[in-house]
Length: 427
Image 1 (cartoon, rainbow, N blue to C red):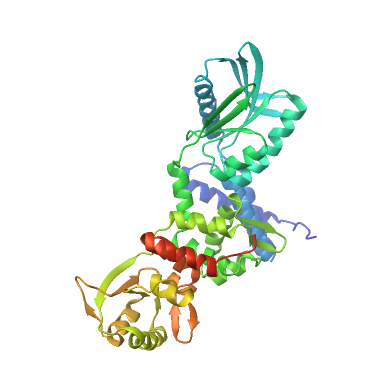
Image 2 (cartoon, rainbow, N blue to C red):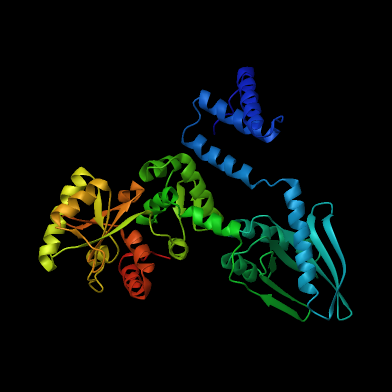
């Protein structure tokens, strides 16, 4: 057990000064106690040598915790929106009359965000509602425990209802499994009580959720995911994962928080572990955007084994001087053959492009291209290349699967075959 370091007044002074400067850059205000305590902790940990693996893990937890703290005004707005949404749903049922909506009902050992008192066909009924700003599965699971406990202890005849700005299908499933009603501000709803059944599901996601989901799969974050998907059963320390992925600790922290929130991963004393790699890969496939770069079409007279030998030679030279690899259908042909494509696909950098043009005898093609090369803008994707046969360098099974899944119906079939062959994990 580490003892808490004895902070000197110099640490305190430096932390307060740093926090004041941090806050002042943004709003010219006196720093809050949260900001002072966070910066004070970091300053003291660094100077006392405690900012090792334990310090880094705790730091990322504290940063994530700070992000989860919502301003009071924001939560008030969400609760007001939740109450309005609940009234709107209930108003659609002629036999229901809303007698009173109470906010922040407090007792000796409990607090309820919204208590709705109803008249249902002449009978009194109550809805006990928990409102949260975050509807990700991890937060939903914890909130459901508190909600059901409050209902059981203080309102045993009431119906528990969970409300958030948005609830994903996974979060909705948690509510169903716990026999808790749910409602979100996007329009999803399920309320079952006293002979009443209301259910509405929508396929849309709010812009904030789409941005949050998309950010998980941006190039730097994707480097972290590719590393973890290579060996989903491995536990990762924050520093190990950052080094293996070639990204900053901040990027790992963001990815870690997103995975935990969606319950695609779990954290224990040994580190971070993917628990639902299939769910992660499904979400990535659905949100996938091909890597940024310039797409170039060429024509070569080489075919069959002659092309394969030339490609093997070209890849060897290109990866000595720069970077190049087979992609999409061409990579799948070596990883899990399904159907040979007439067009060959590559990812390269500038040097690799020059080598391929020379070794494969490529000529620019406006029409009738049989070689497509994407010169990548971000070199991070090359960190995940594999060599399924001597001299054959190609995208990893994960990247190949994503590219195929985005390549139309024929690509989807090849993607499914590749996934069955190379991307199955213990459940």
